[in-house]
Image (cartoon, rainbow, N blue to C red; front, side, top):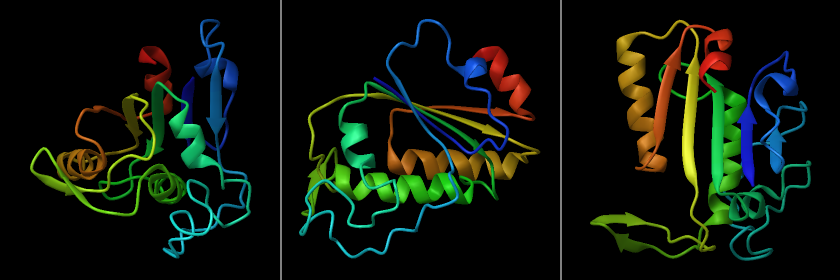
Length: 161
């Protein structure tokens, strides 16, 4: 399954979902996402599922079923847009286990699920070189093997996506 997470206000799914994408889940802003409370409920009370019931509680399970995750985000000061940042915060904890482990020389939370997926991020907006460098560090802190692209407009993304 392909997981597409975007912050586009005007979104025509036919533009980004081509005829070869039979199995795709699109996550977009319905205006109701709550920020992660860091309550550890997704680790202790309801393992793998967020305790906040706002329509985004199943993000960890969705990630566990995907083989490709794509994020399209406006670049905000070298990072994700507020909506995308909320989704990432809400997706990471349920997808991971609560204890820490050294993985490839870095202290990390191990994955709860065994799936492997490719990760691609498309940033758009008037992005400075400093913001590009910051965005690369931010994204790679989440996941090392990632493809990151920068564009001035969403229309440019449509041409390569």
